[in-house]
Image (cartoon, rainbow, N blue to C red):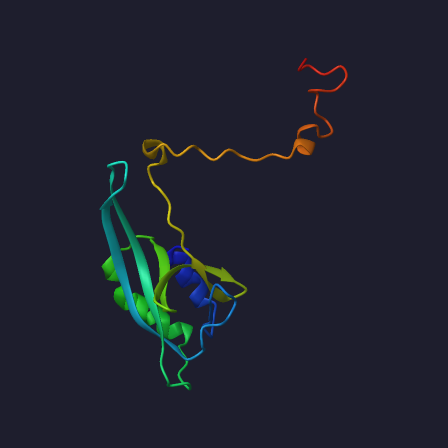
Length: 157
């Protein structure tokens, strides 16, 4: 989710709720302790220099169980931090404490922000000798109705 979509979703909400990947809600008394820009400047295994930037929010849960963060307050936090990403429409991520700090993508579902697990990947598969993943097709789909190939009178044989 990009920051513009995140903000647009916030504008339509009164209460904030985040849901962990396992379906458990982040406790309603969470805080947003950071709103910032993270930059990764790296060289991939194929030797290509890359820069990735993300808007990152840190969710933190304390013992103040009566605390509730309203969407309007989070919008004001974002407005104060926006100069950090200079108007770029960057992807949004959230940091949340599990066994260690986890970093998650964010999607919206019925007004709730879903924390989506991130995956590692090779960015230079062609340089590493990793074969391209071939699309799997069911053989039953190949002879679908309306196909003129491999049927009596068809054009393939």
